[in-house]
Image (cartoon, rainbow, N blue to C red; front, side, top):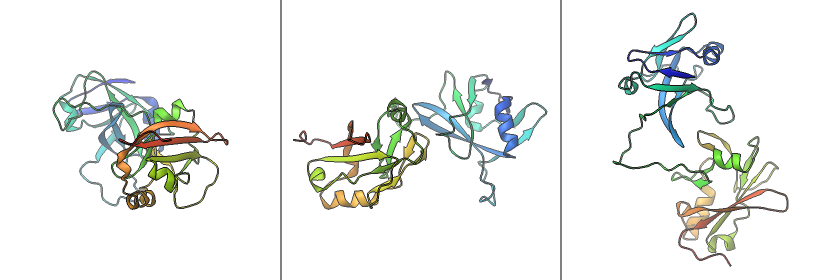
Length: 239
């Protein structure tokens, strides 16, 4: 639903979102700038069961008869009069404590650290700088992958594969065991694992670094599992 930013009060009159806020007895919201192919604002509500004290980033909301009011965040005030779209993200990918999202129309509140820098959307699986394996939403959609109980296994990545400059990871729903198996959980950009400490250590023992691998291709094994292949940069083709 399209709204206009006002300098003092941020007004929500989307019935579905108001019903959601009321059903969860939400009294506070927080606005976070995020990026997922486009710049958007993730509006979150607190976990009242765990937060005993709310910090300054949380703002009290007021319920009117047909509208909900909250003070306009400072970073949005200079865009007073600009249009935004307020919407609910698909529940499969939205954060558990995300109330709704805001899409700026014709402007971006995101401040790049480097002048004229450009964020390029990532549409394929990757390893984050922190050591997580991430499967992006676009990849999941393109390959028609069900995310329910999805795991990733690196068990096919043996010493020969590593020394040849590759990492094989298998997406599956059937059980698999071992220290190189990890559950995939929902993330703002799709699904991700916890930090892959065991795989990182194996690579280090062989003089490799996880951040030096990039997506190459996807194949299917005999069981129709998706096998995602990463290739070490500047390594000759696998023979």
